[in-house]
Length: 331
Ligand SMILES: N[C@@H](CCC(=O)N[C@@H](CS)C(=O)NCC(=O)O)C(=O)O
Image (tube, rainbow, N blue to C red; front, side, top):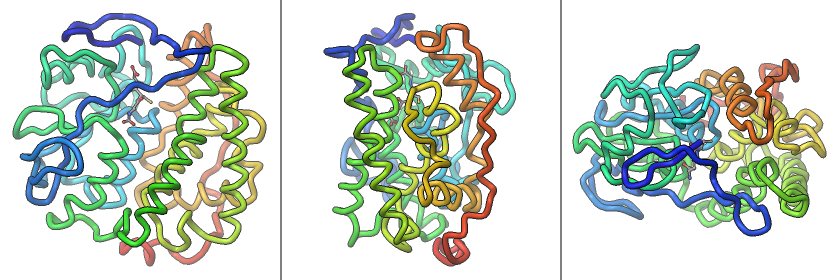
């Protein structure tokens, strides 16, 4: 772990917040790709959608980067937005492109480290170097490094360039999706990190109780509906899925989120399998990268870096959640 200070890399452990709580830093680059290059909800203009103009840097381990990869797959953007995949190990230099199974090197600059990309965009950048990163080849800068925004812009920005028409953020549901995203972010997506990186018993307990309360609530909701908003698949499902798919492999053991496993949930587990089985989604999931990243990178919570052999997981089991997904997503 480390961070950039005035464009220079420093190896240092992140500090915990008050009472040993894990604090997630603010995201730095907040521009939007829009159909005509006009500014989006944040940032400035100049980022028009065009095939081949943008490049995405991800880690296959990271649940935040995973949001962007799934939207890219489901919206049919694989030919329009190219991708690089970092090595699973986040060590002293942060994310790297060291050779390894499934690593896709940086085709633009042949970078060794992801922090080089941040310094290219802003030579005196100070802050953490995170994935995902969306790079603009045209203006040679980072468009955005906030996964929630990359997910949302992928949902519609490229529709006029030939993306699949499915709408991941439908107008009539926006307020409800925003509320669901907020609850899931606070008590699921980020809560697993708050459990894992807690440095006091109280900080851990504050995170683990709401996590399972929300998972139990979601299980009840999903008894009556296929997705979070019935038959309409939205970005909220993508945001929930990226945590669920990692749950038994890493959060249950490594992060001590162990009151229940995903497989113990009667509806939540088949729901996760249903999404895993959508066309293109399984190829965005790499349990090798996921397990090796978490267990080998976080030495403060797993000092010897041993990667457990299990658990045995099968996301290909029948989901039995309803009709062929291609009818829902306009495939
Ligand atoms: N707000 C960011 C957070 C992304 C994030 O924290 N990514 C992690 C990987 S799972 C990372 O790159 N961490 C490196 C670091 O914090 O130094 C987003 O959602 O895009």
